[in-house]
Image 1 (cartoon, one colour):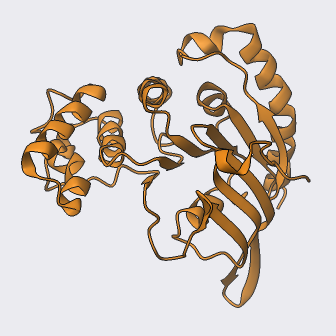
Image 2 (cartoon, one colour):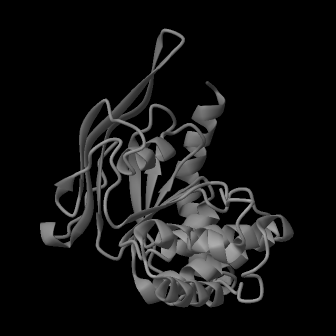
Length: 272
């Protein structure tokens, strides 16, 4: 195993993780989830954390998001240590499920964070309207989540995070529950938004095709305890089309190359 370290200068690094470890106690037994993970993410970089289920990807993301306290190690965002249990400014989180409030309309859900921030009603309305348009939901602002498809709900959840304009976006398998067609649609939505806004994105997935479609770089985790096995540059030009990119010889080449290493970890995780 080896570290995935960015060669960027310190002032270009947005996220810096060093020697991160996490051990959980389960029924009196110590379970080592993550072991000595170190990597950095540059400003405006889109990085995917890839690996089999149980490899510690989401645990690492949740430690960066301050939702889980590390056993040891250091996490810096813009050079400042994160504090477990205390939200870090300018960091947004998109969960696996849409987590929309069923009693609020789509527009009200999207505007919830702005409301908490005390943004004036007129500005809030303008920003919500722009987000609805970006996500193709302009005709559904007054609808309730129960009236939307899974993909539309996930778009609304993504916009609820993006409307507060985070500089760092943490995403934990946000499209994992969607069917293949809807997932690719969401990839196109996210690519369009990211290519315009250029947030720093850390995206957890166990789907190699998803990682190749979206990311600038893929960090591959081993089976538990999660360690960084390899790091791969994804050299597709931007802007990208989520459908057409999968039809290129380079996509097939990278998929086959990375799959061999990922497949080894899938087999290890199944044998436990």
